[in-house]
Image (cartoon, rainbow, N blue to C red):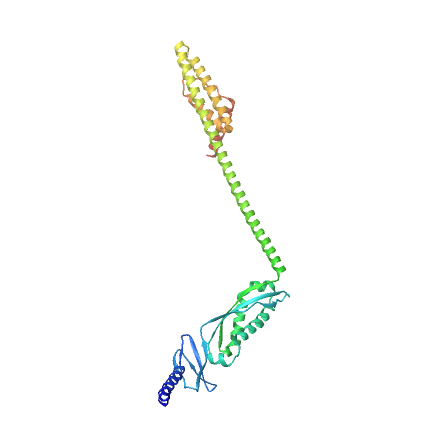
Length: 331
């Protein structure tokens, strides 16, 4: 019996020593630190790696995660400047910068941040009306981050960002806002439709204007060409008739004077047709007179010794004579 006891006792002692030794070896993982206490008093901060503790004296009481954390706080009732009560929930992004102060300066850091966020949010929203609250999220986020970061700095906490997750006005205000948004959307659609109709009407009017101009120009060109054609046709007919009369007269053996008279009659008939075509083309009297002189010049080139001139032609020639005398006197 004594032999068994003497054999087991060393084994138990060795096992106890091994267990105690293993319990004194602590491994701190990446992005974490440990708080080592000796007899209930802070001793040091254990960084990432392996640490050996003094048995029965040292103890790693806290493991602090240094990574950024996200806390989603439940909706908080707030009252705006115009006495509208709404529910707002916030999201806070923070990380621990000083593990010692985080451990010993604050007992419940998350609860403290939640209460501080609620009070800060009420103070900021109390200075804004409903419309400003709905359109000033960035301003509210920035103000809350600055205030929370300053307040939590003594706790070893760094607030990186604060976001308003949801802003929930009362139900009746939501209904009113939806109606207002619908009315505004319909108004914009009506404005866009009116502008589109206006643009379409302008384009249509411009197209009709250009079409009318082109039709008028085409009609004008057609009338001019038609008048020119009738003029040339009348001249050609008059010359043809005169030549035909001359040939017939020669064939019948008529005298030269009678032939000239018949030719002049045919030329006069051609001139009348020319004048009629020019009149239909709205040609003024001066141009008619000039064309008459051109026609008479062709008649004068013949063998006739006498010419019968219209009275308008005589007046027009008198006008040229008067102009010539005036020019002579000036000289």
